[in-house]
Length: 108
Image (cartoon, rainbow, N blue to C red):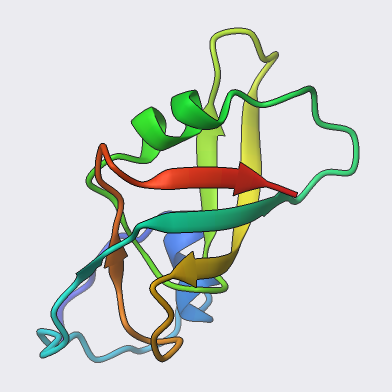
């Protein structure tokens, strides 16, 4: 058995905890380019977010609906976490989407 290190966000998104045994397999799913992603901030009090800056920070990242993403903004005191609540085009929840320069973001 080999050990791997996974950060807290990836563990939360995968639904696993430290010490859990997992099986890693190559996904057969092809990532779909996300046209639009709707996110909600995890914290209640979040300053206004520049949606283009959010897209720039997440460019080339693979996401699925329900994932938590963490973004550091220069104007923020720290890191802001968002939950992915909707992606266009729609697909099954386990299908990965890739964020590109063309992906539009909406913060609810």
